[in-house]
Image (cartoon, rainbow, N blue to C red; front, top):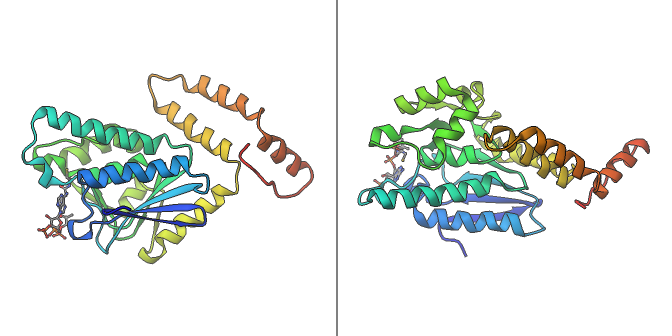
Length: 258
Ligand code: COA
């Protein structure tokens, strides 16, 4: 069904692999359209509890938007491109099921932005991160100026985006851009291990955590009010009943997401 990405469902985790290794998995319009469809699957299919986004091949997660597509764009077309990208990445960010990036190589430009739209990131020790758009006379256009500032702070974001420098996985770890660094071969297993742990928790509560954390970072939203509402809504769920009962009865909770 897909031509530029591939998807595999394993242990209720949809692994979405960007699959243009000869072009460093660059995000052309077809990849973006197919990625949007795969993300729709994560929203809609009950048998999918979470997702991992990764890249195919030995070298790249995603080396950016497809630069070849930039050559003939007008400012209006540039706006359209950015809006489309924003819509897709926002849908990843707002997904009520966890979506994590397993960064297996270069995550540059739109690739770094894709990773940042995910709920959190892990990287293999050969990964490299950067926003090199200034080298092209451009700036990040898929949310990078905003998400990078939120994730690593103003000073570091400014330097990374003004110099276009690439940083190593270890440096990305030290500034909070990624949560874990693994050997290359261990990356997907570590990502799956974390997601399986999350699967054992109450799904509606996990979804509410995602919503509240985003509310904390959204200047148009009262994050504290969001937390009160989401906390209160937990009391109307079977999962809270089950979780509390299981604790009292000293047994493992069996959550149903109701
Ligand atoms: N868009 C389109 N094509 C890209 C691409 C991108 N963002 N990144 C890499 N490619 C293509 C190259 O053009 C090349 O294609 P070709 O074999 O048909 O010539 C192929 O992928 C391999 O890339 P190459 O540059 O030969 O590999 P490398 O190992 O020497 O360098 C990178 C790897 C990632 C450092 C380098 O490709 C690069 O700098 N890419 C652009 C990164 C960027 O600026 N991203 C932001 C875009 S807004």
